[in-house]
Length: 271
Image (cartoon, rainbow, N blue to C red; front, side, top):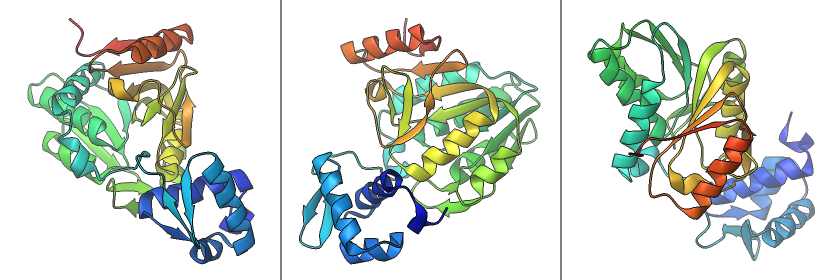
């Protein structure tokens, strides 16, 4: 599907994402990028501003002050590092030798990769195949080769997360069927919706869900109850959530809702 043929809702979602990532988007630039008129873009921005997703200024759109914005993986990897290590170790403990795994990109899934390497180096994990769209993830897993076979998807490089996305990534994943997909996210709400800030990443995560028998979502407590632009999927009986961090009322309510949908919730730092 070309940008010019995008449904209005999807075009607006991609405009909001461009504004959030680039910090500013000019109307003329957006009209050229999406193959529509400047009048159409201005109408889109009116809708996005009303939804609280952008702020309009003369001839341009800016991010909403204080709104969510995706950060480079290097910047967030050291943030809440102990929480991510706890999630990584618990998630890795659920992976069985002799199986196949799709491992998503992100700072928490990077912690999972390190924990898988630790298990392999202890001789506790063998004959595991990990398919990933993350260059950083693949490099972290390299230390455990040949106990872990590392396969990179195809795709187009996205520097912010050092990830491989569409065009190319979803197509290569579509030809697979793995035992488990380990996914990061930016939000997981009480309706079970797993969401992500970035649409390109969300598309690849959806492909991972479609190609896997079960899903393991890794997310700190702060992401429970949150909802973002890109829908990844909906939690259900095939979903396990591994989380950690200071437990809040929002987290407890979301966890209870997820359990009612059939999902399993594991607190990695629970005593």
